[in-house]
Image (cartoon, rainbow, N blue to C red; front, side, top):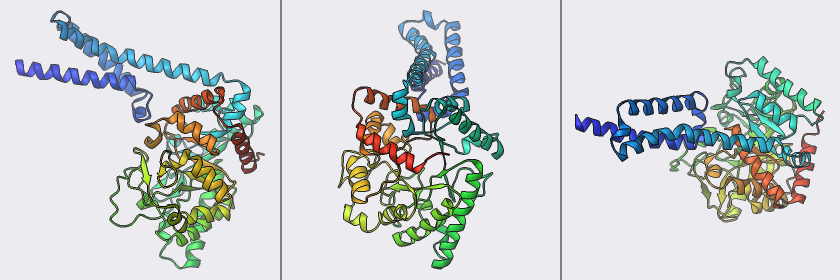
Length: 433
């Protein structure tokens, strides 16, 4: 009996510490799944445990038992503190003056679950675009989502602002985030074994199907195609979410370029822009940037001759945008991931390649960035010449990430010339109605 009681007490101490840790970090993206109902369960469970401990006389059984009661009182208090921190930051962002909104807002694209929250951001000009995914289709038809997007665009026009960029992630294969209701097409990699003419024709057909369906929904930008080269067989990868081996078209850069170029032309036929990804390439990378930092130690000369060929050629022959991932090119800038490296974005993409289209980051909520200094990454990305900062997986992180840019702007840490050049690129790429 005594042994069982000790086990129960030890379990309560351990569970209490876990509950307190979760409550204090309720706003973190890894805990997004617990928001709403999960938070209610946490508070109710903590309250019940405290009540049971008090009814069993724990408060009268010595110092350690009193500490246990206090520990279980902590989760609701810590959750309240985290919530207040979030609301204060949100309030600060929503009250930003017009000049800073115009300077910073166009550079942010957010995913969302709350239509009312994203409507406020859109009306105020705090964002330049939205990202829609399967989360926006839960218990909702394609027509309902189309009406939702149209209503947001109407709000923008009424506020005298340019239309929102509306993006989706509809590659085909395992990344078909709007299927259903949109057509689920095979991955572009399935076309590799066809003859040259047939695979190009088929790739363009895939692009036209995606383009037509996305445009009908109100989406004007697709996060596709993937230009990463297929990883070598036997590469020891820690790849839990990216799954680049199943998404990459081919290990041959020429074939990747041919198929991707045709697909992009198919998209553009319906006014939907393409976004080639994930420069500098994930085919040689072991770690999954959704969770970990990742390094690419290959020399720039070797990458230019292989992995980077499609990234350079496809945008040069289309209006495709370029998504930069969170991989560190150790031979070029060992201290910064490519997504916020001036040596990479300004030095290679802008100057060496003369690319003047839109450059956007991969999701800033990914572990490779968010688990480190996300504020530094935001400031460095804007100063490097990145045009769009993507906050996709957990749109609630927008307030923290925008606050980073806002504080930097107030302290004079943002490069005005870079921001002006970026604004000009955005106007050229998305001129509005």
